[in-house]
Image (cartoon, rainbow, N blue to C red; front, side, top):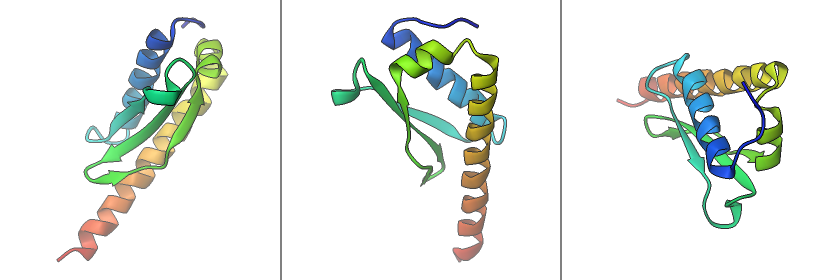
Length: 101
């Protein structure tokens, strides 16, 4: 892996990273990345989605992602965070399905 890159390249990498690790929990989990408006060129907002369930908003600064995407420790910590959030979404959906007649 490497660090740096343009805002668009880093955003594409971040979306792919989030998607890959979320789908390791359940292939139906999707990652959404907001890069528009006031965020453009500065930051990203990400969420995981499972069916109609949305996970919490995760904020990333462009420079933090660009500088750390080459760090195995940083990537490992982010991967665990994403998988944890995906597990919570899947579990919450399972509970919602049980409650719905």
